[in-house]
Length: 104
Ligand SMILES: Cc1cc2nc3c(=O)[nH]c(=O)nc-3n(C[C@H](O)[C@H](O)[C@H](O)COP(=O)(O)OP(=O)(O)OC[C@H]3O[C@@H](n4cnc5c(N)ncnc54)[C@H](O)[C@@H]3O)c2cc1C
Image (cartoon, rainbow, N blue to C red; front, side, top):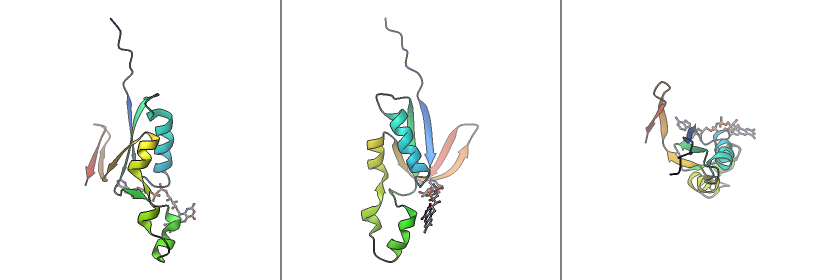
């Protein structure tokens, strides 16, 4: 008989895939979420499908850049950097129950 030595996987949810959340998700995903490590399940939540670096917004506003073509796709990034992506708006955090409520 083989003993089950697997540790419970930590679940980390990052709210917001902006300038702070996105690099955090890729860093943690690469370090902990890779299947060879499998030490944590990293989930990034954002209302949008893609991230656009805000300093580029004036280029979009001026019509010099297509935000659809230059946005970073969260799902694709999650695939390559070993984190999950859930599209939605966090409405509430229940610290006691350790749950998040999403509004779609
Ligand atoms: C026009 C403009 C130009 C700028 N130029 C520069 C610059 O040149 N250099 C510089 O260093 N900084 C610049 N900044 C500032 C820089 O963009 C911010 O400091 C940085 O984006 C802050 O990072 P953040 O992760 O806190 O927030 P953000 O990057 O704004 O990310 C927040 C994320 O959270 C998501 N979110 C919001 N509410 C919810 C919710 N309820 N549930 C789930 N997700 C949610 C949003 O969709 C977003 O993706 C600029 C900002 C603007 C607006």
